[in-house]
Image (cartoon, rainbow, N blue to C red; front, top):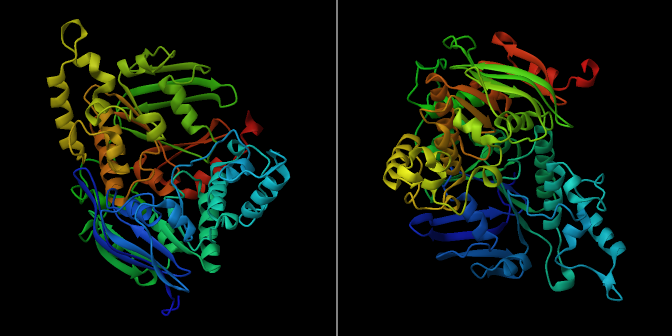
Amino acid sequence: MPTDQPILLTAENISKRFGVTQALDNVSVTFLKGEVHALMGENGAGKSTLGKVIAGLHRQDSGTVTIHTPGGPRVLPPGSIDDAFAAGVRIVHQELAQCPQLSVAENLCLHDLPTRGGLLDRRTMNDRAAALVHQLDPSIDVREPLGSLAPGRRQICQIAASLDDRSAHGGSAPSLIVFDEPTSSLSVAEADRLLQIARDLAARGLTIVYVSHRMAEIFAVCDRVTVLRDGKYVATSDVKGLTEADLVEQMIGRRLTTPAGRIRGSSANADDPAAAALKAEGGEHHHGAFASPGAVVLDVKGISSPGKLRDVSLAVRAGEVVGLGGLVGAGRSELLDAIFGLDANSSGSVSIDGAATNRSGPRDSIARGMGYVPEDRRLQGLFFQLSVGENIVMPFMQRLAALLGIRNVSAERSLVADKFTEFRVKAAGQSSLPGELSGGNQQKLLIARWMGKDTKVLLLDEPTRGIDVGTKAEVYKLIHAAADRGMAVLLVSSEMPELLALSDRILVMAGGRITGELAGDQMNQANILKLATVDSRASA
């Protein structure tokens, strides 16, 4: 990339505090015209906060954001999304902020619906939306309901919305777009498509500020990377001159050494979970090194659900991690829902230690020792109106209660304090709300909820989605620790290196059924993909 590229935007001496948390501390970063510039750091490092300050969503406590225009530098008013938008600054959020029941065109034009004679002018609306969306994907029909599209295409529509210049209302064409974890919920193919879009936009002269935890994406698409740690600026580097080890060292503040091989319970470097995470990121795994699992704890037979699952049977033994591989839509999450008792339409049987669960709901599953960390922690996992302490003890309040069912607050606080220490949950206190925590600490909060002495079966659906390499390493260590303590773990992950690194066996799904089992030397990405792309109808 040319070294004489002009500066487009400067964030200078930015500080921002949320209550007792110092999210940003005197951070200064310069962004060049036409570059893809990554913001990296562990969860809670401040990278998303900086992106939102730049886009005007957060008002900084001190510092300035300056955009450099042909007419000279212009300081943007703090916390004004309208002024930032008018200056050409946009943001594409991690969470899809859309109306799925409305058409693609209606979603893109909600801010300014065209009318004719007092009625909605659908032709103009559709033409305007198509002009935006078809820059990125000509195959999207803007008349279709947005909710009918795959997540990757919905994300493309959200990016397309950021390209709107609103020239009729005094706006300007976009010059900088913040992508905040844009691929966290996408399949591999969808993520690759989005990375190409980011490069194409940069080639058109736009500056892309790219927030992501995925190392491979940073090295595939970004020109420069700025690392933040604990809200402070660490370094800005050209990606071409970096290695993954260099980048991780900047993020967590220490150099990592890769162990010779991860052996559950006796790793060559068991006290360095980040090193284990790096091993997983590289996809290296020594199958057969783990101790033999015990008796069958989870026994699933003949699970079916109309349009979702077909005659799925599996068993997981004590101390065993069984991975579920497959492509998006294969039925993996649906299977976990059915096992936990969330799918009222499903049939079949689920037993824990030989005792059948009452599959009319999750209450009996929990009572018999099953825990579930769902894919979407925001919509399915956490109670955002309750404190972090209450989130941890919620399923077990009755068990901890005193006589007559009165809450035993003292016992609850003691349990939560132990969980905070064991799982290294970073929060201002037990009364904090989950929304005040970083994504990684929210995930650890969910895992802490279920990792107790009464849990026999642990269902994990994408347990490291949207968290940084340091927190990911902690989660890997917790999963191995759960198996070491005799839990039966059933794991869904779309990241194949992660699936290979964590699993003792892998069951692959396609079309709502299991298409094969892999163990030992058979466990590799090629075999997973082969089974994941089987036409499951052929043997149905």
